[in-house]
Length: 177
Image: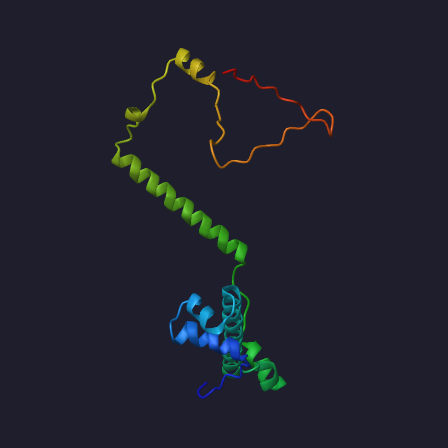
């Protein structure tokens, strides 16, 4: 749509902030000093103004799309509606059948690729075998995983006291000089 005027009501302060930050490329500190407003308020005015303009642009886009896509239910009479629906036919196979067929094709392709890879290696995968005797395997199965806590940045869990309201006293030895 051409020639659409935006109808957005802005306060004087909002317009001044938008012009200062947007068109004049001033920093928030400069606009703050010029308007005698706190920086947080300058940024809040800018945010509100941008939100208003964005909502207006969205409305313009939606209206132009609505104009391009007419409401078929209201524009067509019953004869035209039935003619429009008459050419629609159900699919030959269901979506589930189509997905199953595609899954089978993918599995077949994977098998072909696997066979091609085995032919490239000449079917001899013994070079990649892991040679382990039973003692080494038994020793490895006894190993436990050790997890460590992060040194910094992690939160510590609060220790629960046996009785609420009582604190344990800690005594430190004092150095005698």
